[in-house]
Image 1 (tube, one colour):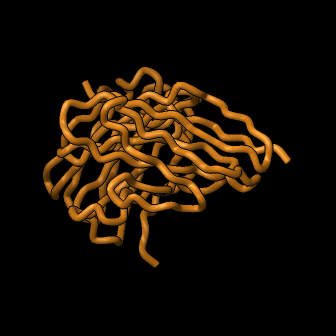
Image 2: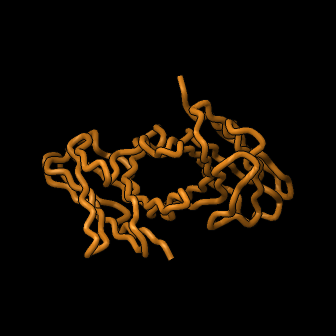
Length: 113
Length: 108
């Protein structure tokens, strides 16, 4: 059953810690994306990657970092520089034909304690 | 700059009433527009896209380039339509830009 898997579902972080959110897809999709979802603000793009070993900043990249060493994986690190990290994070992917639209993961809820 | 605006945070209608969720966009090129839906406890999923010009679950959306709008419509709302709806614009770089979303509540 193909899809996108995000883990963990819930994540708690202490002030000053870096945490990494996992996103894995077995859809053979080329492009992958990270979004942040906050109430009343919709989804905002953090980073995206169109091919392996390449990625670009989205609208709110400050305090985040990513890597794309494999086509299947696009992990997101929330660093201590991110001032307000508590949010719901969504990963998505798409193939070049875009025939089926973007596929989304089930999300990770990050809470700073 | 590219922007998607959904002016209503909440839209409440009675079952059987018509529904129109508004979406306006600003984009200098030829955009590709989508509607995504998120039902309670489910993943965000594609509802429809303007290039396919299809009707999904009774919903339709027409791209109006003159008014830069892509409103989502359904003639008779059902309770199972209650969900969060997002309008989104895709530009040539494959970035997907979302509106802030509209929560549709269909009351019995």
